[in-house]
Each structure stands twice: as C-alpha cells, then as structure tokens.
Image (cartoon, rainbow, N blue to C red; front, top):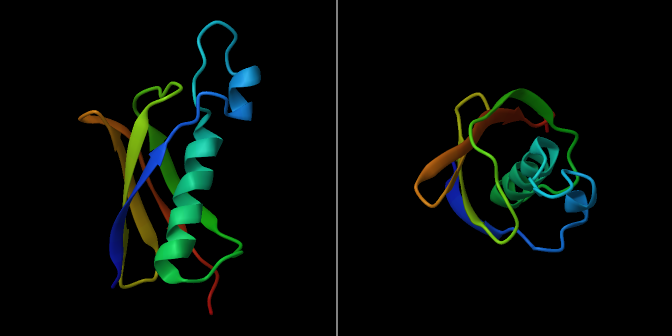
Length: 101
C-alpha cells in the first residue's frame, strides 16, 4: 500500500476566492477535494480517473496564502484515505475510491 504527503500553498489569487466569500475569502470544500484527488492520482500514478468520494468532512476554514499538508494512504481495498492540516489544525479528512483497473 502506498502513502505520501503533499504540500499545497493556496494561491492568494485562486479563482474560487472571487465569490467565496466577498470580504472573507475561504477555500471551498470542492477545491480541497480536487487537490486530494490530484494528489491521489500522483500517488497511484494514474491520472484522469473517475473518483468516487466515499466521505469528506471539513473542520476548519482555509484562507489565501495558507500552506496545507495532504497526507494520503492507500488501503487494502484500493481506497485512498486523506487528511489535510494547516499550521497544526485539522482542515479536512475523507476517503476516495478510484475505479477498478
């Protein structure tokens, strides 16, 4: 089973900040899921997969300029579990299932 950590520095000019939310920009959960999927594809060496989100929980908001750490671990079932942290706080966690090979 594979596992890895990836870092992502949230760009201050990320397009999602335009409407999410005026005056207090927050990274949408879907952007965090997109990053987790991107890193899972790198971990497995299989880009462009049609992933299924098993579950996802969001614990703390993320703003522009923060650096996030994504810890991913592949389970025996093939699913990828992920946890996201920033500056010692839990941001998100969940699981992703890739399609069968």
